[in-house]
Amino acid sequence: MRRINLDHLATTPVLPEVWAAMQPFFSEAYGNPSSLHQEGLRAKDALAKARQQIATFIHAASPAEIFFTSGGTEAANLAIKGVAYASQRRGRHLVVSAVEHPAVLHSVEFIEQQGFTCTRVKVNAEGWVDPADVEAALTDQTILVAVQHVNHDLGTIQPVQEIGRLTAARGVPFFVDATASGGWIEIDVQAIGANLLSLAPHRFYGPKGVGVLYRNRKARLVPIQHGGAQEEGRRAGTENVPAIVGAGVAAELAGRALPERIAHTAQLQRRLWEGLQARVPYLRLSGPAPGLGRIATSLNVSTEFIEGEGQLLLCDLNGIAVASGSSCVSKSLKISHVLAAIGLDQALAQGNLILSLGRENTAEDVDYFLDTFVKIVAKLRAMSPMWDEFQRGAIDSVVAPRGSGQTSAAPAAGMAGTSHAH
Image (cartoon, rainbow, N blue to C red):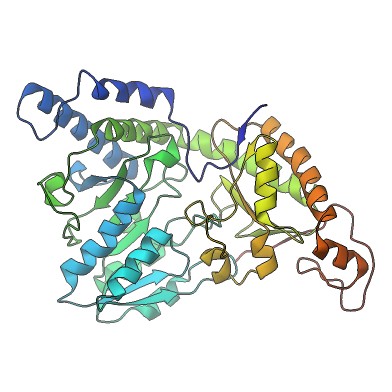
């Protein structure tokens, strides 16, 4: 059976060029970059090249501003905790959006247990953060603001440049989680005004096991992992040289191919959304409509009267990989905190799917998914007590309410709902 990956937000396959660059550092170029002999110096040079590739990719002023970690999660932990501990004499207050990735929110919860405080800024129905709300949350004790570049569930592009101007004017460090946007949207840390920014190379065809934290000189940062003096003393532990080499190559390739990747996925995204609207009744899009406010790679849809888990499993049985809620929280029975933050109805939140596209997807992939998904929805609704009650008029639709007391049949397959642009 053919397999189609519509879960690129979870991870991506390593590109052949990336794997080829990594391979020597598993064998003949096995040196430790902290060693002073030739094998160590070769590894050290490889790290320096990768640092330069990443710096160029995000328009950092210097390769010295790039630090390697074990992943995007560790990078977020280091940014949040490292800045908080370094700045606690000045203040102990943080500002974050309510829809940040769990790596950010759980790091904040951890330091709150140690006496720090945090204001969680609400978002609108599309998951969009209002810069005015961020500004209103700032106090004289604020030591860090954290707002992601693109929301990992909704695909909403946040106004990070506006927020960066606000934080710069107040002299408050600004951390941007770009793990959902890196490799798919142009990132310029200087234009954004980010003092810290995290990347996850495995989400743009690099390897797992490596993350990136950009940190400029204006952000004080203490290590949260102790040991050797690697990464200028900011992150102890022997560097994962093969993965770091792969991350550098993946970043260089992404930088070159970015316009092509954006155009390709945007075209498929439109085809996917238009097909869903035309063929699946009672379906809601969460986040902005495809266009300027949304990353071109993903759609977050909720199909009414059925659950996301059943949709995911039947998609998988038919050769299609999709996600139901964030890949980092999908084992939880609770709905995504992001969907809760935008006020999505509980029934719709439980019927949620995230479809994320990549460079290797084709129009044929999209059409196969649409043909298959229409059958899956029909099958699950045929087994759904809620769908039966709706058909009998006992309950109404959240997506397209008919009004109390109405008992007409469901509309033709084309009734789909979407939120409005902010």
